[in-house]
Length: 246
Image 1 (cartoon, helix red, strand yellow):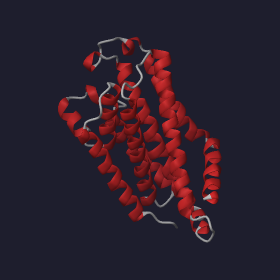
Image 2: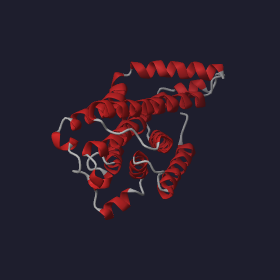
Image 3: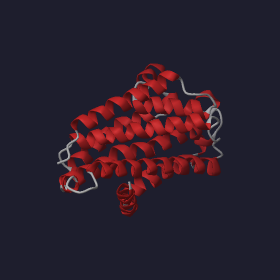
């Protein structure tokens, strides 16, 4: 246990030194929210579905963007680089098993994504008066599930990629449709009904709708939570099945 904690602390320090990862996970989604909030039309009440302001709809989208960047673009090349450099293979001969390193990476990236979400929520409230989630437990549950979905998705990319460069390319390719389903380009609530129904069957589309419902004070619809759990289970099983230590 002490060895695993030491690995976690070391990986946390290494992550903090990666300026690129810190920027994209913590700063970029926040910067996007701030820029959108500077547009007058995004602060006009009643100009979005349900009488909300567009900035109100984009806050949970910015939160999901932080999660997606952590899971799909930052985690995979890190894991793949450790395998490519033989670090996981060498660790298998020590008391600290490779699983401790993998767990540390998942925890560090998950914590960064959740921290980014908290910062975004606070900034939206302080800068633009975006209401805090009315159902905080439901919001927290949805955010944790969304983060897990992104992390196991990133683990699958790492499992299937032969090199860090390949995982970076794959993660970038997967990022764009994931961002679309999360509502980065068009909020899910503003999509045509037929498209919205399709998007809700994706992990981040379901997460976006669930966060919106939690923000309004209700518990997310059970089908949305079920969709997220199914994706987590499938992606986790596939990543475990195909992950290679060397």
